[in-house]
Length: 453
Image (cartoon, rainbow, N blue to C red):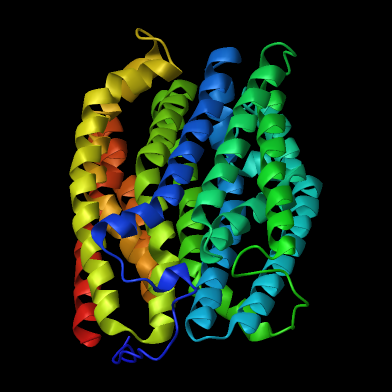
């Protein structure tokens, strides 16, 4: 970050919305479509699990969480390319290299599509072994296999959806991205209901509805970038291996985060299966998906302003970068306190949506809601810090923060605390990891601010 030292006012930013002098209000207005998009994605993702729990059974709900590590890895690879490629494209535009930005963008999309096809083929060939290795019990195996097989078929569309969610923002059209994601999510929810209730397809209906929901943003995104309506467009790609390598290296924190989520989800499932059986796995599934919903706000805000940070990094505008970071951190701190209050107040309601009061699953999850929400006081800053370092082409620090909060510390606490505290130790693992990580995030952000002066 030592090279962020000077301001280059000669760069023309009049035609690019990323180059405006943002205030608190205008920054939130720019990020709002992405925030809404992520919140809506959280709602329809959690809606999927509610449908499975209510219209199939809690064993099927447990099965969804058993195969979630595979989904995490697919999303992680897509987000790695999207975040890293977006940072490159935005930096190119900030430096006035618009044609090169479109060439790099096109190359990243081609590579992501090919990777999605490869994953789909390999996953279906080794499906049975994957399901057993993930820890499925005999009772959960049929649900796991049926659900994962269908999702794997839609992997290329899933990769394109993740890529376009990020790159449409970089193209200066966050509002369009929001509308597209809402439409896809609504279609997913409607199809889930149709397949699972009137057509009685069970867990296969949930997977099919989710997969078909991927196709909408994939198809519309292709049309958008082919039309050239944004500041990025499809063009003849120039094969530059360093673009792919830099996208992967710079966005590796996002892959680290998702890969870590895959491992920790596996550890959560194994630990709860050993302590409380299938009901314990269902309860931790409720907590994990609720966490995804309640942290979607922080993820959306961080994704929404990432292209702005990358653009000003490309311009070497240190004063504006410091201003943007200050606004963001103050906003996230206030939002973190509000999220904690909401989660504590709404714990019984959220738990009851998945499983009726009086059931074993409800009782286990309700106890978790008395401890787990403490993590929301700290995770917002950690999510933003990791995203900000990615946007500023500092993948090393970004990956370090992601590694700590999503893998290193959680794994340590999951392997130790339950042995001493039982189920309480499971619920404490995430809050403890987020708290220690926020100390590191604050130190790294402070050091960056000093270096950029």
